[in-house]
Length: 120
Image (tube, rainbow, N blue to C red; front, side, top):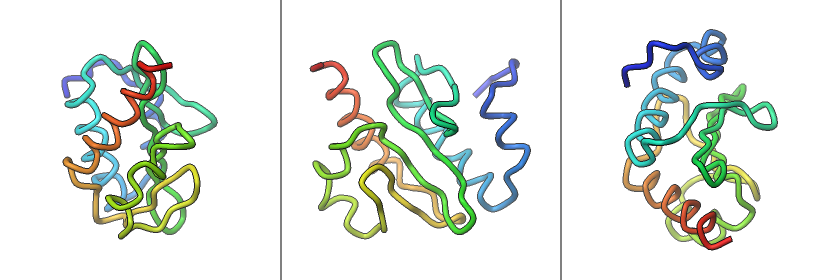
């Protein structure tokens, strides 16, 4: 990712230590790969990725794990079988600091959210 401009997410990452920083970076790169037009922003205090029709994803580093936010109340329920191995809340999927979500799972999460946004 050839960012020459520092984003709010770069600022957020100054407080994040390894291995969480690398894991965050891996997930961030996959989001940019699948939705090249996203802009990085903060939403509800969470680093987020906004496409032209809405936010497609968010990632945060917590005290004990990283969280992926689809910014949707239904994406995780729709993909319940695919995310069954992860602990989660209604709005977030939790994963280990040293274990990024797989590109295939991220693609599925993002595609589900993008199709939800485009059908609104």
